[in-house]
Amino acid sequence: MSDELDITIVTGLSGAGRSVAANVLEDLGFFVIDNLPPLLIPKVAELARAPGRPPTRYALGADVRSGSLEDLHLALEQLREAGARTRILFLEAADDVLVRRYEASRRKHPLGAGERMSEAIAEERALLEPLKAEADVVVDTSSLNVHQLRDRLRSLFASGPADQSLQANIVSFGFKHGLPLDVDLVFDCRFLPNPHWVESLRPLRGTDAKVKRYVMKQPETEAFLAELERLFALLLPAYVREGKSYLSIGVGCTGGHHRSVVLAEELARTLERLGFPARVHHRDVERG
Image (cartoon, rainbow, N blue to C red):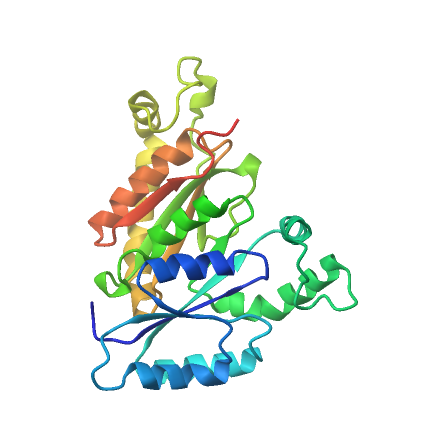
């Protein structure tokens, strides 16, 4: 592991899974401190750099109870000026999902004094929106159970960030099931001929060789992938220069069964040729 100080801020909406994230990162070797006041973050960095301390990745939990966002921004700026590698992991979920989770846990929302739960969630979402906009990784936990969230976070953080300048994650999805909320870029491949209308291909998935051959033989597919390669040859080095550590890409078709699955796999190969290996997840391939 590099001697470079590495600090991940774990934040997001209350009830979106921050405690699970902290446990996962701890299992992966991070030194985790939860609810740390932002003004103390530079002090943690100072202690981490003390002579004789081994290189360690730190995960610092912060939410609306930890202090002002202005203090957090100031702390992050001080860390970066001191040469620390920093990133923000932001966890979110849909309002109705958060309400159900709070009802099931019977816990009080940190902003819920005298307010309806929906109003407290809306207030917190508005407060954290600027922080979400700066996040390196946004994970929407609405449709994830605890085990799926653990798997997702392990795929993002299992290897040390110094091993790779930018980590790309590609998700295939179906527009009829909704846009993924935690992607940076979205590409729509519904313009390609749909294997769903070929009777022999309809029950198969994009991971099947027959479906792949059908999608890949379309002239539009070759042209689309060529344009994507040119685009990412421009974007990826620029993201690295700007200090971006994680890039999440969505590839969508109608149902998420055929075209998007094939294109997501091909895009991963394209990124690998450009020197940026990518992980691929097929969100809706098994959905009806």
